[in-house]
Structures are given as structure tokens and as C-alpha cells.
Length: 291
Image (cartoon, rainbow, N blue to C red; front, top):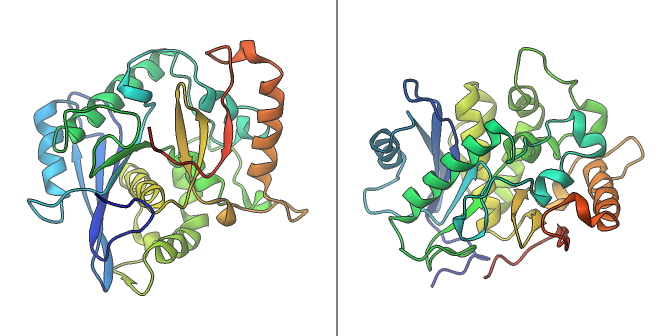
């Protein structure tokens, strides 16, 4: 069985930026793979129909028979891949305080949130069909784990508070944040996969959907390597963020996102009616994703 704390010498992970257009290819796939010497990634895009998505999945595999060690999907995922449109702990924790104006997640209970949740769950099941019929919180099977990514804040928590962009009017958060933290992302990748060269600079990527899918793939890599922070609840799922040691500083030299999250955990712990279910299992720590 694959040991999730030790990345193999060669392998690949998958990131998916979820879109749900029936006519345009707005779902982006990124397969990030590595050998003993190099790291590279491939992109493919798809419409919302299953056939288009399956073709894109095949296109980003490093080999026809290769398996992804981990998958990260930009959309709400609940334990056992249940579809339930309720406001979740992770969304609440990452929407309060400074996060309100720094790319907070949408609510699964909203119209757009429900659609995103539905398509993210469909994509998770499609990927898992390659591995196992057993749908379980994590690991989903002996060889693959599926995690929830959120590119806005995966990138955002890396950014120093003094450099954080203002709310974009015509661009999206990932487009503003990615150039500011591309160097940090490269260092994160190289810390997880040392002694390898990256095929091309991350900063060379500019397409919005592809950048988001790449951020999801790096999320999967961090989770597979056991170097991540998970925010949320065992009851309704976790959003995966980079390892705490990489988070950006405030002007006072403290990690601003950790400050905000700890404040939010304390606040919500005294207001259990805010989050479903009544008990709050909010966490800010490295998580063991075992069942």
C-alpha cells in the first residue's frame, strides 16, 4: 500500500479546476508528474459532459496505465462524497475576519455553490472509478486520495499581508495572487520533490483556468506528502492549504492567516449554532486523513 507521507521517486498527482459549462471547456485538468530528475505538468480542458471530461483525464496522464497518487478538486467535497447543500465549517472559518476581503470561499448552500458542489462530486467519482468502488472520506482507496482544493486561499495564505492585492474588479483572485507567490510555490514543490529540476517557470503560466488547475495539483502534491494544513470539520469536510511554515507574514512578523484562523476557531467554538452540525470539529493543524 502507498505510504502517503513519503512521495515515491516517480509519480503524478492531478488537479481539477471545476467548471460546468455544457458548451465551453471551462473544466481544467492539470497532471503534475515527476521522475528522479525532473518535474513537469500537462493541461487539458473539458466541457461538463462526462465524455469530454474523461478525454481530458486521459490527456493529462503521464502514461496510459499510470495512477494519480492524489487528486485535488476545486469544489466542495463532503465525506463519503455525499451531496448535501448546507453551509460548511470550512467555508465559515475561511470567510470571517480578514478573509472576507481576500478571496473567501462561496457557500455550498448558495445556488452557484450547489452547482459547484454537484460537479466537484461528479468529478471525484469519475476519478475514483479508475481505482475503487469504495467511496470513503480519505483514503478513498489504497492507491488514491481525493482532497478539496481552494486555489484562492492556497495562494493567498502564502502571500505576505503587506503585499496582498486589493479585491480585483476585472481579474480573479488567482490571477492577482499567482504572480506574487509563484516563487514560493516553486520552493514548496522542490521541498516536496527535492533534487529535481522544474521543467519551466511557474510564472510562465497565465491562463486563468490552467493556473487554478495547477494550484489544485500542487495542493494534491502537498497533501500526498503530508505537508499541508486542513481547515474544516470531520463532519462536513476539509479544505487543504499549504504547510504552515510557508504562510505569509504580517507587518508584525506573525503569520496573518494563522492569526485570523485561530481567532475564527475561537469565535465559532462559542457560537455552535453558526455551523452545521451543532458540535464544531474545527481544526487548524496537520491532519491525518485516515478514516
